[in-house]
Image 1 (cartoon, rainbow, N blue to C red):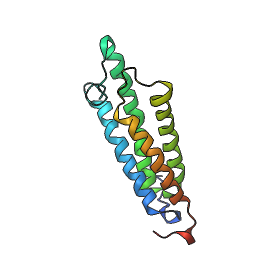
Image 2: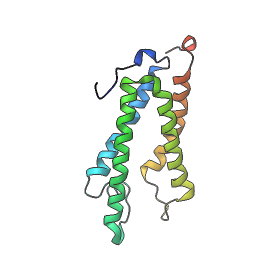
Image 3: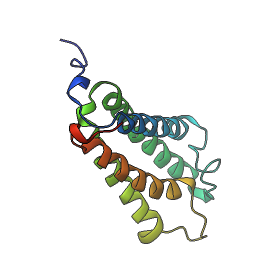
Length: 147
């Protein structure tokens, strides 16, 4: 018994571009996860430009918690992109759900009071649109695949 079951990439019939896009998303998730987990301010000041006020400890703790969840999700995305490609469509849907909720919260339900949006608010909208394109490519029938 090993930690990871054998790869099943030979069963994937979708576009290789979709798997590559998922691998890119994994890297773009793991990198900020490491910042949120290990930077002295969790990226709250250095990246998001937040005023931590008198609750610095709470804000940094929340950013570290987010870093932990990002790291786990990013590693799962990377495993799917590299070893378990039949799960690429499912993982793209999960990414789109996550980013959709993030965009809803950042732009509609809880927009920043000062009007400044961190980079993730913009990135989430872009990832939703690109995710939809790569999801369609991942679900294409093998006979219709051109790349």
